Length: 531
Image (cartoon, rainbow, N blue to C red; front, side):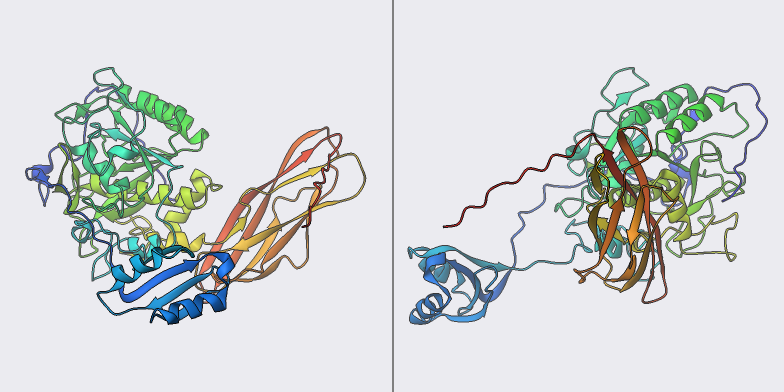
């Protein structure tokens, strides 16, 4: 990891300027909001010449086939497990065939054979304008490939500390959680500038909803925290308060697309950064737009991921600050995103790069909720596409982030996600099996261990194997004995590591195993009734 820059303390200056408030000076300057009209109704696509039917159970497989043939319908495929039958009809007569089947008294349902698509390409109409997520030159973060693994869950909240967020924006309103306006001292953190709304959309605009754009994490919640006024100005006192609020109200990721010189006295903010990190929050900040060194603060402070900007040529954007504190880079030039007033527009700056990283952090934390903030940061750094000099350098940090590589690295999990065992005073061992699973289509050769070791928990051999997205028979047997301490809850870490068939490293992935030590385990047997 790079060493964070921190200058000697001098007199506190209260003005805190948003990094891209002067966006007219940066390439790809802001234009008026592009207001999007209501999206047209989405017409579901169907497989022509096919329908699906399911008969009542008493009809039977042979009876169903005979009934269909009697009506001139040819079964193409029958699923004994589900009872579904895929039927051939003349193209254009799907609706008529469905109506005729539904008129029978022996059909559960009949329906079109609707087309579906890989999640990697969302149906948001302006997704094609988001080059930072996917472009032909592969100078992007490989978002669609990552979305084939995971699109982001609602269990992770990103706090956007900025000018507020448009609370009624159609691409954001359904995911906004309670926030606060520290400028006007109220609980309505609405955006009166546009910058915060733009940032929020990059990180977490609703994906695949037929509206506007797609954020890096489709499902993440957004907590708007307004510390910058309509002109993009604020102070570090309100910034410190906002960080504390985010940490105390469930945010897992904080994005700060704002900053000022590290020569100020940042003690108040440092304290709250440490507080938030202590509560497991990952903090991300923009590096600055002066095209010089060093990185601005809070990005330049320890405990914050500092993000520089790249352009569509995968080069450092000319305005992007650099230096010893830089951690990673992300697309920042000509970034299309949400804008206040329900619109969309294009901005450039490290302010736009930072939420790409915050969105990826939310994606990772949703996919692997057991990972710590430090582990997520390390994962993002280690899976970045190395640009510039080999390894870390002051212009790109560890490189431009790669969402696909990040998720593939951790695509090894156990089910249930948090194993729980019970044991009482009786001597002996209690055992439980957990399944090893992956969303990766490649085969992963894996091994498991308890690290650090726990006297009461062991694994039955073999604690290794090979797994892919089509595997169903990979298990780990957990064996627990009575702990030496008093009754209560005991925890240990199950650690999985692996190697993909293409040579990639997976993990280490840490899962918490819980053992409840109680005076007596009650076993209840339920009678089984047979007809």
